[in-house]
Each structure stands twice: as C-alpha cells, then as structure tokens.
Length: 278
Ligand code: HPA
Image 1 (cartoon, rainbow, N blue to C red):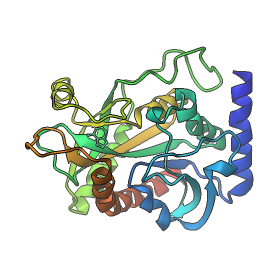
Image 2 (image 1 turned 90 degrees about the vertical axis):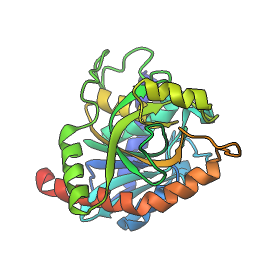
Image 3 (image 1 turned 120 degrees about the horizontal axis):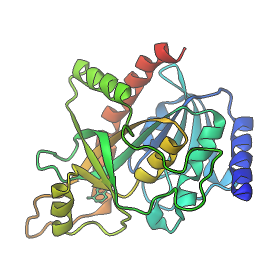
C-alpha cells in the first residue's frame, strides 16, 4: 500500500508540474468520444507514457492522452482514453488515474462510454444519463482498504450525483436534445454479449451494457468524488436479424457520430457548475 500510495503521489506531482491550472473537474472519455478533448482551450497534452506509473491505452478509439485546459471557461482535466480490465490490467491499474485525480484536487468526475442498448426503447445514437449501475466485474476495492482515500464499506446509494443529473436534464430540455436515463451494466468483456445475455441483463434491470466505467466510478465514490455519467448507445442488443454481427468498429463509428452532442451537453453542464464552483 505504501508503495502504491507513493506511485499515486509521483504521478500526481508530475502532472501538477506540467499543467497550468488547478482543475476540480475531470472527464474520462470513452470509446469514440475523445473528440471533446479537441475543444479544450489552452491545452496541455500529456501522453500517458510520459506520466510515471500510468499504463498505455491499447484499444482502437482510445488515444492515451491526459489533457488539461479550459472547456467553456472551466478548468478541466480530461482522459482521452481509459484503461479496461479486458486489456489485462489489474483493477488497481484500471483505476490508478482516479486516485491520482483525487490527489490533484479533483472533486467532480464525469465519465462517458459507448454502450449497447438493452432497453428496447433505446436506439443507436441515443444518449443516456447513467442514473445507477450494476457491477458484474470484480470490485476494484477488493484487498486491504486504502484508508487514505476512503472507508472500507463505501455507500453506493447515490452513486450518480442527483444535482448534476437534474442540471443535465434541464440543459437537454433547453437544447431540445432527447436524453434517456437508465442503469448501466458493467461487464468485463471483451466478447460482446450473446442475445441471451443481453436479454438477461435487461430483465435484471439494466438499460445499457458496457465494458468500462464502473471500476472508476466505485473508486471515485470511495474517495468522495461527485460523479456524473453518460452512455452513448452504439448498438441495439434486443433484436438480432439473421445476418446481424456485433462489430467493434461500428461501435466506434456510432460513438463518433454522437460525440458532438455529448460534448455540447458536457460543456453546458460545466457552465452551469461555474457559478456553483466559484
Ligand atoms: N456490449 C458491451 N459493451 C459495449 C457494447 C455492447 O453491446 N456496445 C458498446 N460497448
């Protein structure tokens, strides 16, 4: 634990030495959603391989940069690409950046991902506010508790921040952008689900299904960060024609198409928070 805490500190110290501001909001950009980072002004781009103890992103559609700067006048720290459990990283490695963020003073974490729709009213291109999750991956907090970040048994009753969700719903209405709201099911992947599995998780209360996000959110909540999450629905896991094939490239393409709308919504949410933060 001491060694790991030292590594968090070394990564945080390095990042702090490279960036200009002191952001309190971080954004993790999921598959195909990295284009938000291009709108960050006065940006400092730090490739992950320059940050002590950071892993490398090995997945198509994930670029592997930490970017700091201003988005809609708000200081942010964005991860363009994340680490997934299915890449072979340990849960400690997957969630390493979240603890580094905590040491950097991040109080709010926005997470985004590409997800398969299992709610039969969801269509490709829909955006979904994550209102709750079902974790089907190993819990990243397994092992001795790291007391310097949080308690042994962290509460997960209000994992996704109600105020941030309410603001986002208002913003979407003002912008006439239809938003879904639902439960994200986090699985390890990397195989896509069978039709029976999509149906199973739908019956279990899920609305969208994916291979990320939940580990980072659990570690963020353990450390007391406030979390907002959004999924982009990139495929429909509830009807399968005879020739249908799930394809990772289609997922990225669908996410790319929706990235502009998600970016717009995130920027508006930041503006809403500006008065609150200052
Ligand atoms: N399943 C799991 N992960 C995903 C999916 C899916 O259907 N779509 C995008 N990420």
